[in-house]
Image (cartoon, rainbow, N blue to C red):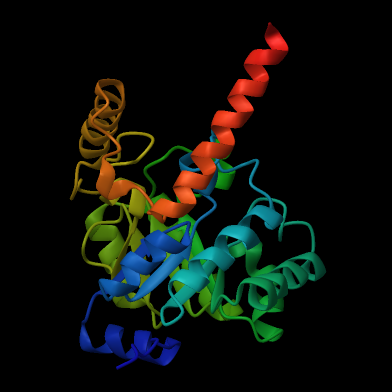
Length: 290
């Protein structure tokens, strides 16, 4: 039986019923396929692809074209999962028209179900414009990596900052965002916002009182590019892959890989003809050298 993709209505009902949403960031078809097979609720193609796959020092250099390529791969790997494309720096900040056009690219070219953009009240017009164009938008506030030079990492550690965060959340809700991602927020303040808001509030590094949890696949399986405080390493893939690659190299050097079971077969008569042909070629080569 084909898996049924969840809808925004399903996510609202999950919030209402107190059911946590499982959300993961993936970048390619294989990882997306594994996530869908594991019955993940949502997949985000994050601009963190820059750090984790493309070798950039941050998310800043990531382009729309790169995001479209990776988002399309994830969609092909997880055709029955709700997928969100992460709008990279420069793809929405300059104007409503640019934001809408790039969001439409995500929908048309990569077949995502929604887009995500960073920023609270200052992004009200952009979120509203995309929502008015019929595009489902996820807000992202708290620590926002595209603006990392303007802020510290952990957000909302006092009343003043909490009030600012709540103001951002309310602005995004009013603009039409159907959900919001909180990043790097202490558990209790994040939970208070989740309970107060009408729309689903998800978290990455925002404790467990939110309506759902996001983590990056690479961090979950131990392939992350840096130590991550807020996610558990569920599988030390670095160790397993290191052992596997070391074993692979050793087997090649010793001559024990590949073995006959790894070979493609050939008919004996065909092989005989090839060998006779090469014997003739080798004799001609030897004669040329003499």
